[in-house]
Amino acid sequence: MKISKDMKIEDIIKHHPQTLEVFQKFNIHCIGCAAASFETLEQGAAAHGIDIEELVKELNKAIE
Image 1: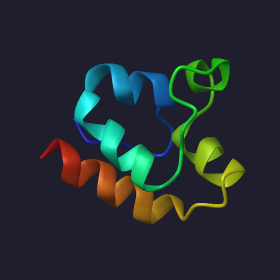
Image 2: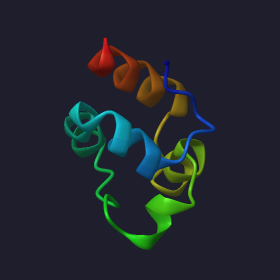
Image 3: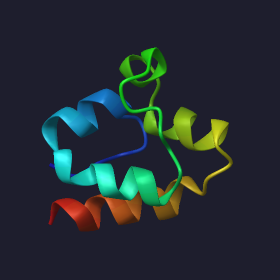
């Protein structure tokens, strides 16, 4: 199952814990915060000024 920008951050981490390193690389440290449970990957990237396409690409590399 590929990661997409409309997935919730919490779900990505729950199902693919190996993505934690990618989130840290992109300085997304909201792992465990309340926003991670309802915020999509795209919303989180926008809030942190991160290129969503690059983030999705890196996350999918991590789960290959």
